[in-house]
Amino acid sequence: QVQLVESGGGSVQAGGSLTLSCAVSGFLYNLVDFMAWFRQAPGKEREGVAAISTRAITTHYSDSVKGRFTISQDNARNTLYLQMNNLKPEDTAMYSCAAGRPTNLWTMGDYNYWGQGTQVTVSS
Image 1 (cartoon, rainbow, N blue to C red):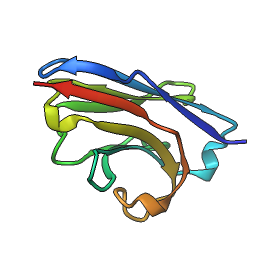
Image 2: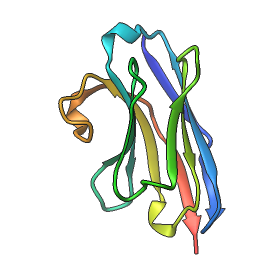
Image 3: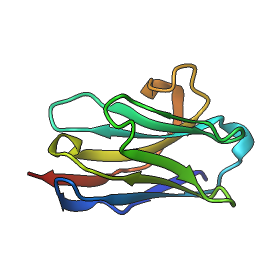
Image 4: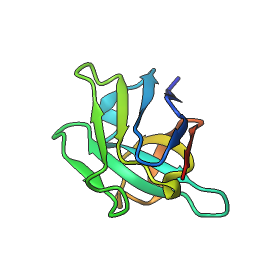
C-alpha cells in the first residue's frame, strides 16, 4: 500500500526557516514521474509550489516560492524534502506531498498519491 507521510511543520516567525519531510513507503517509482509539494491556505485553493522529477532530477517552482524554497529527495528516494527559507506570513498553509504522472505539474488531479499534510504557520 502506497503511503506518503509528511512531517516538519510548525510555527515560525517571518524570515525563519523550516524543512518539511515526506516519507514514502510501499512505492514503486516506475509508477510516477514527479513528486511535488502543494499547499492550501484557509479560504484558498490548493496550489503547487515545488516539484521534482523522479528520474532526471529536474526541479520546478512556482513564482511565489522561487529562490526561497528547495525541493529534494534522498538517494534512496524514500524521502522527499522541502527546505523553506525566508518564510513569509503568506506562506502559512497546510502543506501536502503528492506523487504521480502529471501532464501539468500544478494540476492537483494529475497526482494519484497524497499525504495528509503538515501545517506551517508564519507569524509577522
